[in-house]
Image 1 (spheres, rainbow, N blue to C red):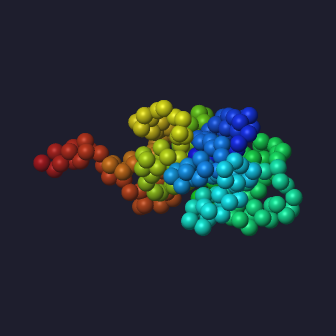
Image 2 (cartoon, rainbow, N blue to C red):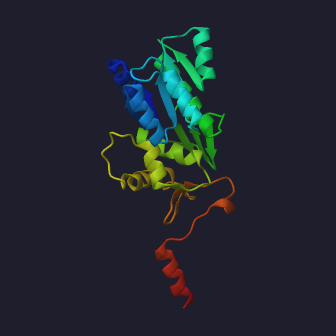
Image 3 (cartoon, rainbow, N blue to C red):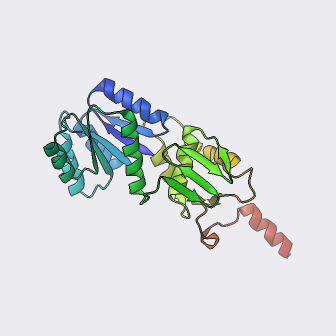
Amino acid sequence: MRILLVEDQLSMARAWRQGLEEEGFAVDTAMDGEEADVKARTTPYDVILLDIMLPKVDGLTLLKRWRETGITTHVLMLTAKGTTADKVIGLDSGADDYLAKPFEFDELLARVRALIRRGHQKKDPFIRVRDMTIDTASRGVIRGGKKISLTPREYALLEFLAFHAGSVVTRTMIWEHLYDEYDENTSNVVDVYIRYLRNKIDKPFDTPLILTKWGEGYMIRGDDPADDPVTPSPAVGKLDKAKKK
């Protein structure tokens, strides 16, 4: 999932960004309110981590502007101003959560995961797709009783697909949510990681979960097999025609 980290203290921003990336998140950064405003308006972030005391435009002003213009991205405010009155002002300004500095990084991660689940209308930290279970807290994956080891990038892709189980996600959607502004990969990296996932998630099992909607994108099967909107590849279509002849 893709996060915008808005923090003007460089050392702190670097440490948090590194920690988030190690957990598999794609992280963009902004050092002042104006930069954050541009990025929030042009990129579909899953969560924004927003400091209040920022150069150029402060965090509360930014948040009010975003909500007034219809930006609904979940915002977690990070600030040294931790009194009850400060929290009330932040939450009443449109924040979804509020975390006072200093804090434990594990708590930040837990709050980010909770906001991502809320964004996908999921309260349970476990995502279940057919015979596969994804633990979004530990980032563990089990299918058919077998534990599956994934890299952070593979896990991020699987989780994104699972949040949209039964629906097609385009390559553009995947790219926008899983790769940050610093990533130098080309767009075909999405297809590469889909192949990696299939080798681990599908290859050892009889029923594939990751499906292709030709010309549109990818999806993970939903609960109802009748809802799998999959069309055959061109090669399969030609073979069927040949058989009919």
